[in-house]
Every structure is written in C-alpha cells, then in structure tokens.
Image 1 (cartoon, rainbow, N blue to C red):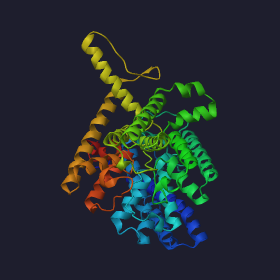
Image 2 (cartoon, rainbow, N blue to C red; image 1 turned 90 degrees about the vertical axis):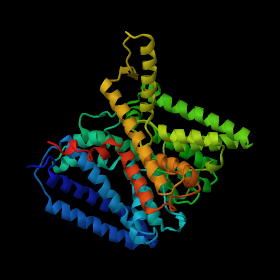
Image 3 (tube, rainbow, N blue to C red; image 1 turned 30 degrees about the vertical axis):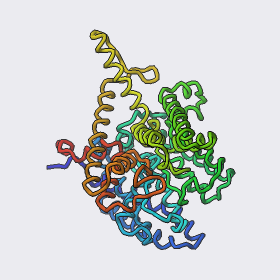
Image 4 (cartoon, one colour; image 1 turned 180 degrees about the horizontal axis):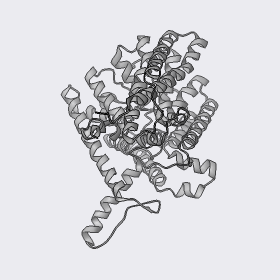
Length: 486
C-alpha cells in the first residue's frame, strides 16, 4: 500500500534545513574564532553533525520533483522544526555548560520557538559565541524557519505555497506578492531592516555592539533571551528601555501591515487596522492599571511606576519576556493582569506569542452576536474585521483552536502537578511555554529559571512550546488516526 506521504522528497528537504542550520552556525563560529572563547569546539562539532545529517538525508533520499500536498507540508513543517531544534541544541550539549541533553534541548526549543525560558542560572558565565547563538536561534525562529525555507524551495523544484499555509494554519495570513517566494522575501526584508535599526538604536543608547546585536535578535523575535543575568534591568538605562519598548511593540504588529506602511505608504490603512487599535488600546489600559497599582499599593513614584509598567506590559503582551524589574514582587492584581496578557499576545502575522489579538477580538464579537441573537431571534448578524465579513468557517476554526488550547493547557497543568509542581507555578509555567512568553510567576518568575524542574516537566513544557509556536493544529494533527488515512 502506497504511503500518503512521499518520504524521499520530504526527508531530502529536511536535509536542506540541516544544511541551513550548519550555515547559521557560522555566525557564532566566527565570533568564537575572533574571541578565541570556549565555544569554538562545541560549535565546530555541531556543524560537523549538521553537515553529516544533511549529506545523509540529501544523498540517500533524493526524490523526483513534486508539489507538496497539504498533509505532506504539515509533516514537513513538523520534521523541520524538530530537526532544527535538535541540531540547535548540539552547541549547548557539547559545551558541558547545560547539565545534560534535556537541558540543552530545552534551551534550543525555547530559543527557536521564541519562548525565552532558560535553565541557566549564571548566563554571563557562558562564552559569548554561545550567548550569541542563543539569541540567533530566536531570531531565526521569530519569522519562522519554514518561511525562510519557502523562499528557496522553488530553486530546488518544490513549490512553497503548501508550506506557507501549514506554517500559518491558525492565523489570518495574506499574500503580499503574486508569488509566495516574493512574499517570503518581502517579510524577511522588513524583519531584517527593523533588526538593523534596532541594533543601531541600542548602540546609540549605550550598549556595546555585542549586547546590541544579541538583544536586537531577541527583541525583534519577541524571544527574550538576554546575555545578561538581570536582562534589560542590568543596564538601568531609560534610553535602552525606551528603544526596546519601541521595537518590541513593532515586532508585535502584523508584518504585512508594516510592509504596506513602509513600502506602499498606506498610513491611513495602518492606523485604521482594527487589530492594531485593539492591541494598542490593551497595552495602554494595562499600563495605566498597573501604574496605579504600583503607585498606590507599593508607593512607587509615578514616573518609576509608569516606566516599569509600560516595559513589562509591552514585554509580556508581545511575548518577549524581557524584564526590567522583578514583577513577581508586584501586587496580585498586577501579576494577574500580566498573566492575562500572556494569553492574549500580539497581532497575527507578527513574531509575538499568545492567542493573538484578532482571535480575542473575534471571540468578543461572537459573544456579542449571541447576545443579539437572544434578543432578535430572526436577525442575521455577521462578524467583521476591518470592514470585511469573516466567514463562518474561520470563526469555527478560531473557536476550535481556543478549545484545543484550553485542553492542552489543562492537561499540561495536570501533568506538572502530578510531577510535584505547585498549582500556581504550573499554571504560570504552562501559559508562559504555550504562548512563548518565557518568564512567568511563582517558581518561574523573572528572577528565577526553569533549572529546578525535573526532566519530565521540561519535556512537557517543550511540547507546549512547539505546539504553541505551530499554533497547536500542525503539531497535533499528525497524532490523529484520520491524518494517516487515504
């Protein structure tokens, strides 16, 4: 019986992603050569194994030119992510600084999924080359490894449209250009331009070039890895915090919307975008509420309270996870509000985590519609986004995704408590992992890390990271029996 997945071409393409990982490792390798630090040999070993695996897969599984089916694209996306995460963990594993394979894979998964959770207790003890690799994994994962891949797949005879749909299966995606390759390159162009601008701005604000590059990678990816133990708070600089706030906010906005603003000068459409306005409003309201909480509850001066509140609201709201202060010491109201922001996240089509603002807004409109239907039973009410009616199929898909996210969240919390983690920390850690935030509350607060968890707990959280990054469906549909039926 012929398999529904044409494995030779699928595995061959995974080999190309292994090759891309080896190429990406050349950046930290050059830093290790230049500085002569202890990351040189771990990175060299990792490049060797990445090239060996790439050679094996490309050489042994070369298949005929095909156009991927949707099912093959889903398998391709999942295999590519898992393979790259595994290869990305090798520099950490070979460095002997992470305490074993589980910790190395955890750090890599956290990086590529832009979660920002770490098991490191002394971050600054790591060689600069490995610190840069941590941040670079987030930058690569921010826009999406697959989105980068579809720009080059046509060059080797495979169309990228199915991969594009699989990568963004749960979001409202749109093509900016007639050809999918041009769309990918346009998005990467905006992403790289903003990253470069962030590096320059951070350098002007007082960071060294190394810190500026590492933090810019994490900022634009909304990842949150920092080469400093105290994250952004270690700089104690209003200028640096202001730059990071600005670029975190930009990274949380739909990149297609930004493309039209920068390339097509459509300012009115940019400002009238419903999701952007809801996102900005949520940031503003949350900042005001937490500022009031800090000034009244902890007697923090107004300027300091506003500065801390704005930074943490944007950081948590976009899923970046940088910290400028220890919000675990804030009042319960402020902590709970940050937990809510973990779930909401940023805009669709951005690097931000969370459920995405468009879905939250759509859910609110669905609830309002049901109220209207209760009053006017014969009325016909539609859900609209930016003046266009949302198809019922899209609404049903959104509700199904929310239901699936709730099931995963509850199941993961049960597993963590079964492994001995307290309830509050379980809820915070799962939310921070599922929605790619990083720091949470309780034992995983901004001044803590994930090193104290047992290996089974870390694997559960890694599952949540990858499932959340791939918006649940792509990761879980391959586990269903119907997926493998003809």
